[in-house]
Amino acid sequence: MNKEQFTKLDKRIENNLNLFVDGPTKRLIEDAKEDLAIWISGQNVTKTANQARQFPINKQIGKN
Image (cartoon, rainbow, N blue to C red):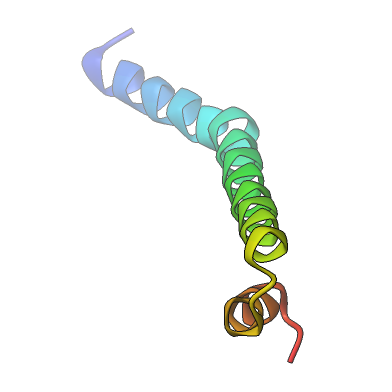
């Protein structure tokens, strides 16, 4: 194999890793971060029972 073929093969491997491994894993991590932020926000609201803190949380989870 020459250098061009190795480069092409490396690019294919990198693309497959991004598509099948890194991409889904990054999405799972981002989803977990969002879930954690919502739970922490909910915990803060229940501790303070403050209506002013509930508005940003409702906005974050899509409730008006």
